[in-house]
Image (cartoon, rainbow, N blue to C red; front, side, top):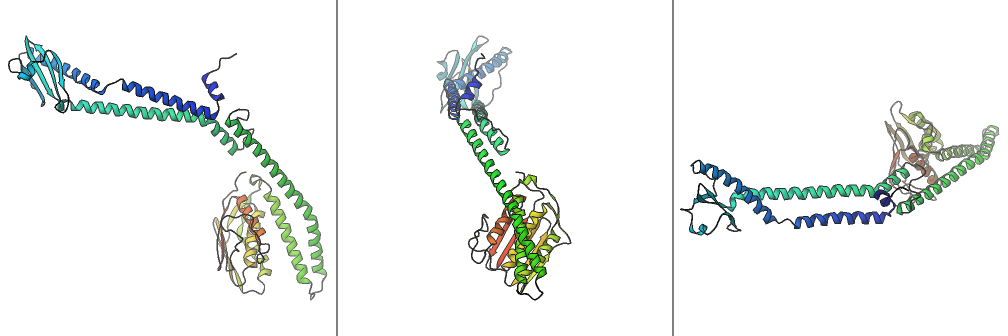
Length: 418
């Protein structure tokens, strides 16, 4: 049986225990370093550096004195012979002697050519040593900070590695999710994600089945109604008062068929949509022609501001649903003024001079719009528009007031994958 390693034992620990162990090890390392620093006395280090520096200077002075020359000393350094040394310095024997701040001084007594010499140096002479020692201390502190940063990054990487891997798997829907067999908090989270993902898939499957079944089941009666209405239109006399009713039944039935087809497309994944070039100007002009019954008898001008043609790569039926629902609402609820469609490359705007959106519709957080008495049926149409826009990966913003509405669509090239 293989001997367990520290890594294998570490991976068996819970996430809470791993974080605790990491902090304990980091604190132990910090305390060890602090204890090591406490063993080193700053004054001892400085005195040792000064003593070594003076030993090197004494060696050079002895060599110069053996040649019978009196050396030149820098400012702050004084060399006395035994016959001219100040009385206060005669009491010191060979070796190093010094005085602390504020009147810091350093004395080195040595012999050369059978005579005793006294090298006296002021504290300012060794100021550069303080600078080097401080720089060394700063370097040590910086090194410790960098080491702590590196250790922290390394430790955190090991601690959050399972979370990162699990989040990537959830984001990319890579199944089965990792760590489902783990007994720590990551395992609990992975199993919860797996259960939730399975529930969502089952719910989506049920929704898709319902949308497909409902669409197929409703198509037959709608086709019968549409056929009967079309027969009535052809068989009724030209002046019959039933002609407007039969025409309205036919148009409403056709609209319901289009809405069912749109809902069936919305039940599919965006990645499965068949994309192609969609001529927007032709589609808008078609929708404007279909909207004429809602403008009959009203002082409303319907205008289009667009280039000769604008092509967008998308799904034709879904784009047609967006254009038709927005145009129909604008024409249906505008009693006077203007409904204008503005088309540019990558953008389409539909503006009207109607009463604006009702209070039951939130123009920012689009959801399932609630119909009111005046806007009967508008909620469902705008709700479908919002779902289609999200399905295609477009963006829609709305400006609404009592003077009218303006829907702005920013059309991306391809729908999101999902």
